[in-house]
Image: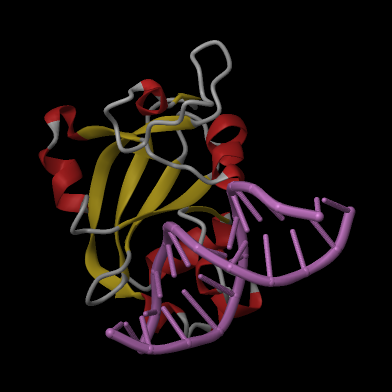
Length: 154
DNA sequence: GCCAACGTTGGC
DNA sequence: GCCAACGTTGGC
């Protein structure tokens, strides 16, 4: 079992939005970055867990935990000419983009802001991807030790 | 294959 | 709104 961090802009899709969905489940679609695509296609598996991170907002922070409830499968929004995620170069026969399904697990007892994570020597020393300079990936791996450490800050 | 131009992300 | 850091595109 592996751990991840998923970024989302709360104005577009927040943890509360996920909790409000039918079955508290949603497709994690629209990823159009090859490095993240590879993770979705090859590495992220049903049964994994991920932090839900709010980005591009007043207080960027880890706000909750979600369950990965599917393996990666082709992102069908790429096939839909009306979708903003349409990509003519991705076809059902040869899909270019992938997604997984995620389910609400729980909200953290308190939000853990990025500013606080940046002050944690353990995370800096262990090369935590979120606080790494220039890191812009919308999905990133979290080690078991990092996962437990962050939960201990709750 | 290089690299300039452009677009995007996301913290501040 | 600014801007640093990346990623992508396309001419050559």
